[in-house]
Image: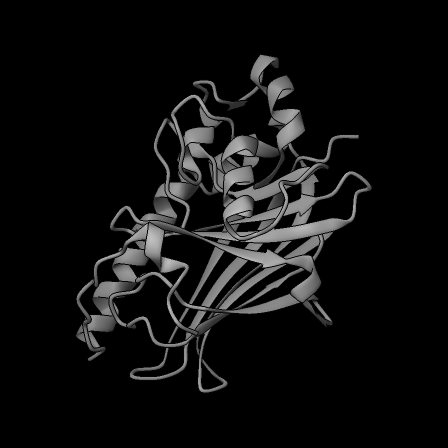
Length: 259
């Protein structure tokens, strides 16, 4: 049975302060098993791994490295830089595919397992609209167990929204991918959530019979997410939210910022 899947559900954002604001969107995304991508490259389908298709995945879109590096090799360097061994078992990632060669992932979530199938670490790979990216490594041994799954709290390292500065921490909450999946990222200051964002989805097979109805109902999903970000940023600015200029981002030093 294929591990890779489509998750169909809803994305919600809730800004709690200055001014309060909410956003709810129907949303679908892919869970991809890295070991299955080679087979996806050869199969006749709307989706392909590292190959031009209507929907596609590119290793080079994630983390940093040489263009020819695989996603697993890029991920290994991220884990090593955080003081963890590379994942020796299955790796799955929740991410938006490219549509007609174009796409944007505000955040991709990675589940990294050891050779016995136990969770070794999770990674929240955050991209902003300025072209920066930062990987928040979340060791399994540092996770807090919560009703939805596992939770981690980490210092915010990279500018994302123009209406929040670098103050505060992210609280990431992830469920193990199953028949349902929950992924959450909240911006917290002084123990109080200021911005909540989460996805709840239901698993469906990664097959053309799933993708075709979704593409007809919600086409160009990666583009829609990018457009929604800018549309609601404009509305927030009109509603009085304070605009904050983007500070410089230096990948080599971001992980050494004081807590």
